[in-house]
Length: 520
Image (cartoon, rainbow, N blue to C red; front, side, top):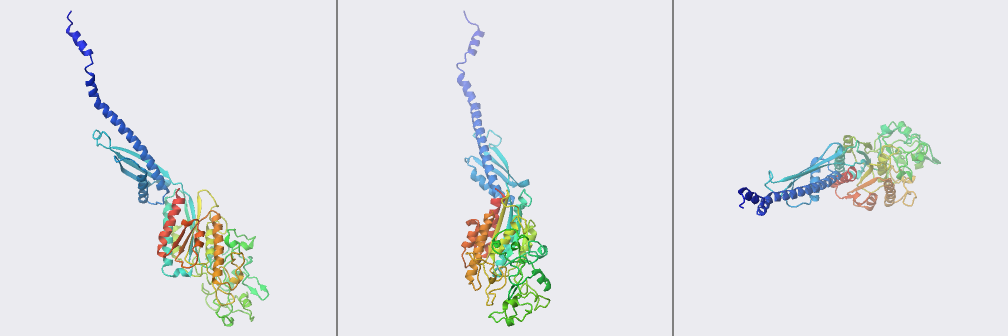
């Protein structure tokens, strides 16, 4: 029987054998597009992951840097981002931002332009992926003592002015870092000028209990001698009788306290600080020695021919004087330097104090460094520093000097001028073997003894966890190993052959402090 037309049509429609190739061909375009799109999606996802990792690392590196401005942060962040981002040539870093946010945060973002396999089928032919991150600087607070040589040799050339510029720039840098910190009072700085002594604020500390107020210290009476021994003298009383005031200078403590931070204690008078008092030396016309006494400012008030009796008389300190009392003549002779400034966040006052620095006197590095230690120590005399080893706190001392340790020599029985070390015959300075320097010791022996005390002092300071930077400026004699060994490590020591390079050196130290302590 002949089949009907509808039946033949139905069989034709149901027979798909001839359509498979055509249908498959028509389907390949969408399938390919979808496949390539999936590949692009995977590439974008991978690129985003890599971008995020690279951005996180770059932000951390920027946070660890000493950058204080957005432009500095951007430069550092971009450098690390490009180093860390390892992608193919069809990936372009379209944008990156590194900036300071609030509360010490580093805010960073970046965007990649990805060339897709199906370029032209998207709106602009480019696919973008982005990443962002925030890092909080893990900050420490720092206490910094600037211990600066203000001896007479600093007047040579431009050394003093170069030092002032370098120190002020250092304070500027520390102030910038403090402003970026999320911690209050993140950077506190003290200033300790030194020569043969150190000068305190005489108004603030005239009646401090850690100053020997009553002549109780065993070193107080060493210079007030008679033919039979010492006699008592209250130095503040002698100042008053002379009609002048103590200017604030102090003397070295008796060993071993000269190289320790043992707090001064009224109950243990040897630990107290003795006010500097340059004794009246014998009348020049009766001295009988090759050099006249330089500090003869009142009549001897005795007929004794014994120079030590003439010098040691207490009853001669009356209103009768041979001239005006100055830092070159009188009991304050040798106390011409600027005052110490305790730990502070008043950076403007620090800069003003640095501007006022003046150079005068011989070099006694140990007394300067000891008082730098005092300013950051947790105990008396100032008790301004935090306790040793307090978490997130660091104590730092920067010592700068332009000369060797020196004790004056002169052709008089005193064998030198009065200084923070007292006269050599008082035995205040110990040699490396623990014995006191003797009268007549050579210049080299005097330097060696002070160097020995300095080396011991440096060791004691570092043993407390304090970091020491040392800067040696235009020193042509002596052994640089003393200051190099004094420093915490080799890269904490700087030998500056030209004082004009002090500013970059102090900036380098500021950078180290920022990188190591203000951000970790």
